Length: 475
Ligand SMILES: Cc1cc2nc3c(=O)[nH]c(=O)nc-3n(C[C@H](O)[C@H](O)[C@H](O)COP(=O)(O)OP(=O)(O)OC[C@H]3O[C@@H](n4cnc5c(N)ncnc54)[C@H](O)[C@@H]3O)c2cc1C
Image (cartoon, rainbow, N blue to C red; front, side, top):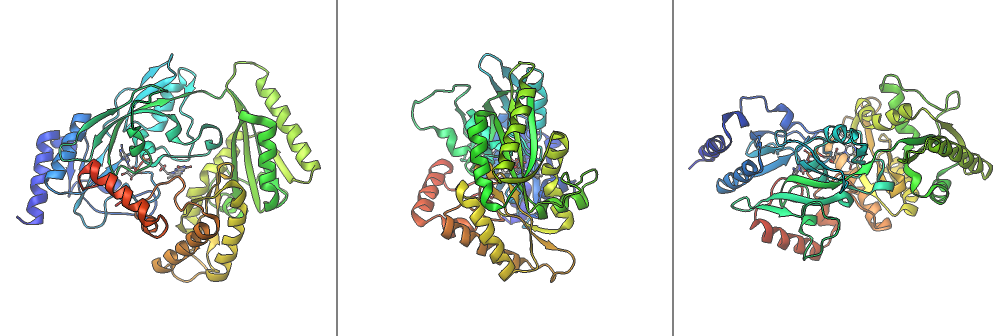
């Protein structure tokens, strides 16, 4: 049988199982399922849109029978190209878009049960009605299943951790021949009955199975906050200010987000209604967005947070740790922070590196990496920003449209490789901090992870899926 005939039969079986309306095939509008958030476009043979877990199981089993590679996809906001098919036209997309049933909130347990395709904004809209929130904060609106699959971090990691920390249970469809449906815990916070199997599906990009339902611990909504953008004196004082803030505010510290002056200047050039908050002073080389917040009902708590932040800033000025600060205007400051990714795309081609190091090493890496870029790729602009409170940095390089040689993928890859080598060899850092692995960074797994570890991963994958991983995250 020809490959084309095999694919035709696969699509026919999918239509029989899901109904014609839940399977899109070539000729129909597949664009949004093939176009990734950042450059990694592909070509889908079909898009399956299951509406139930049983449907998901059927899709996995049918594709397995026809030996068709299936790429799970949530909201398609991932930044490493793992949620879209490759360019062969021989892979199918399993979109969770229609697996988005009602959100079930358990107030006593302070947890929620949610289908894999539900968007973060929809979940939080529902939770807000009960004074609750799922506090992973980022500049995109992903699906909950995709957040679990990538183990999303975000701008409030310093207080709430990553998604993994909130997952109480999962329902998954395993990537085996029959699409086994597994119930891996529900709303229990304590449960030690054997291997914690749900961990295999968190942060592994859907390689071992499809996340169809998630039980999450949720948090009281922040009711009071105080926000400031501050300019550390130089790189050497960033960590000292962080440690002082942790000592002063304890668990009230909910964000400590660093942004380079280069990244911010792109925002002010391209994003309407944004401006340098330090004006008429020039933009500092680096600024940090600090947020304190509380969820208590005390009416004066907000004022107390603001007064505490003022006192802290004064003390940091006096100690020479910071040279400037603006307070209040939280919406404007967060808009600036969350607009950086869009602004960089306007500036040129973005080579995105999502890295992490021990917190004390991060500023040293940032400095060394800048020297490397200036020496070896002088036309590239370093526009980094990130979550310096948790050791994360989006060390983004922008290949400008003007005043630079024409973009060339091999040179971009070389720049990426050189920086990862520096990060891993000198700082023992991670080349994939929170966006997961996929076509844009997956090749470095074999370079950096070591044969023994990769071999064990492979054996676990084979045991789970009997030899055929889903998607493109670990393949
Ligand atoms: C502007 C912007 C800002 C961002 N900021 C951050 C940030 O601060 N922190 C951060 O961590 N990320 C950030 N991201 C990246 C992205 O939003 C996250 O990785 C997100 O969690 C991906 O979810 P998704 O539903 O879009 O997944 P997709 O992009 O659809 O898929 C991502 C991966 O998960 C797999 N997958 C998706 N759904 C499922 C499922 N139900 N079961 C199994 N596998 C599945 C896919 O195959 C793929 O490997 C940002 C993205 C953008 C565009």
